[in-house]
Image (cartoon, rainbow, N blue to C red; front, side, top):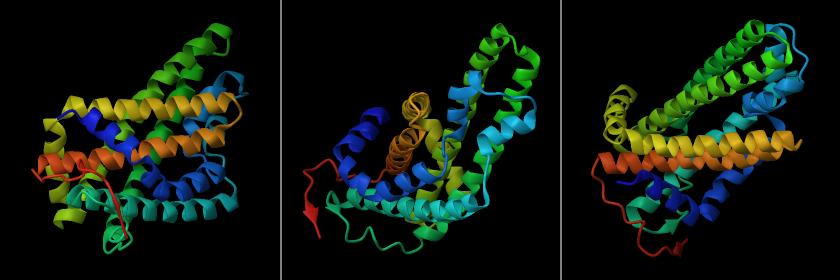
Length: 271
C-alpha cells in the first residue's frame, strides 16, 4: 500500500471536515502556547544572547504562572479534538459516509486518548530537554565566534530534526496503539505489541509520511518565526501534523488487521 498517497489523499479530500475538529485547539494552543518552541528557538538562535544552560532552557520553556492554566486547557481541548477526530475517521472508514452522528459520542475515547496524550507529553518534554542540553553543549564546544555560531547552528538543526523524527515515531506508535485499544478493546501492552509489528510491515512507507509531515511542520514554524508570526506557524503546523498522524494511524491499523474500508466511495453528508 502507498501510505503517502492514501494519507495525503484523505487529508486534502476531507480537510474541511478535519478543520471542524482542529480549529479550536489549534488556534487556542497556537496563540497562547508555544507547541513548536524548539523550532522557534532554532530560527532565532544566531541572534540570541545566551551564556549558560539556564538561558537556553528559558528561551525554550520560559513559563509564567498563567501558562499553567493555558497548558491544562490546551490539553483538554487537544484530547477532545483527538477523540472526535479519530471517531470521525473510524466511522468514515467503516461506513463510507461522512457523518457526525456517532463522532460526538466519545464513550471511552477520552480516557484512552488522555492516557496516550499524557505519556506523549512527558516523552516530548524529556526529548526536548535533552535537545536543549545538546544545543548548549554545541554552544560550549563551538564557541561564540562567527564560525562557531555557524557550525553550532547547523549541528543544532540536525540534532533537532533527528530528535523530532524520534518524537514523531513515538507519536505514530502511540496513535496506532490507542486506535487498537479503542476499536478492538485490547489492553495497552497487547495493542502496543501489535503496533510494532504493523509498523515493521510498512516501515519505509510510514517513514515517508512521517518525514513529509515533520518537514512541513518544521518549515512552517521556522519561516513564520522569521516573519515574526510564530503563532501562525504554530496554528498551521498543528493543522498539519496532528491530522496526518491520526489518518496514518487509522490507515495502518485497518491495513494491518485486514479491515475493509468504504471511504473511497462517493462522500455524502448524513445527520
